[in-house]
Image 1 (cartoon, rainbow, N blue to C red):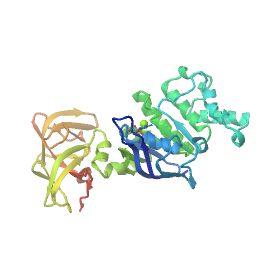
Image 2: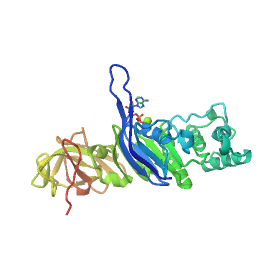
Image 3: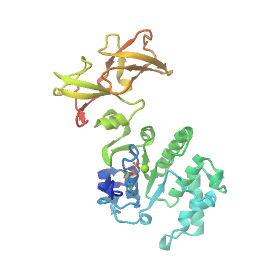
Image 4: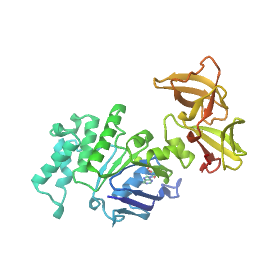
Length: 367
Ligand code: ADP
Ligand code: MG
């Protein structure tokens, strides 16, 4: 089921005398989610992810704009009639019901023509339990399950009505690190197996990048960029997106373009074809540094961390806006740890320029 969000805006009334103005939680948000894809809504806390998801499922009504599922305009439709399955951060399983009863619950509440026979309900519950691999836990109560198992029950409960759309709001936040990794793989597997169009909300870029077909990055209620994870990583449209994606994070330098050349700390570091003279932010991915004894970017060497396959070089530079320059180079290249400086050349495809004021991307002609 294709989902189209068209110019969605949600404003909340301000609270009290101190904040009389309205809060624009989501502003003019337009996004097309292709049928069968897993799309990640990504951004820092408070950027409007949950509000967007709640509008898709019908828990919030947009102030303006429309939502379509396929050809159906569902903007004003109540949540029960939309055919969505929803999983929240706190899975909210019924503690007094066992796993089977928890999954069965949404089906027992179907009324009228949607009502299923007892056999059909049982069949669906078994099928869904098998899908998320909890068949052996059906008689247990939620408190007798691990966090990961509880989360799978919550997903089964969302899937049992065979929804047209699956919506997940920070579903992994309550799990410990290892289980988070494992469960995100499982969500991906379940999504692939069912082919159900899924929107996955997270503030964790690594999580979104690793399992999503497509990501949509938000800031202050505004969609900043959307696309395939690698595409957005390789071609960020603004400094915010460049900084939000990637671990270790991108390194941001104050730079200046003069005569179609980028200077950092007064040294010419890269060609900047077609760019007019201006001050810029120059952002370099950790993998964008090449160790080179006569390289133009001279940094103070702080320390070297060997990580097996790679070496992480931590240095500093006066033009860097962060406390440290983090570069990752292959383990074969030798860093002279006795030296107080380390010199780099930069890879053009891994360094991006942004306008100083708007922080929008400045396109460099590559040739
Ligand atoms: P996220 O899920 O990305 O953390 P939310 O969508 O929950 O962000 O919130 C976006 C903004 O809208 C925040 O500033 C939040 O305080 C505000 N907000 C969310 N829900 C309400 C509400 N019911 N009333 C007033 N403000 C709200
Ligand atoms: Mg939220």
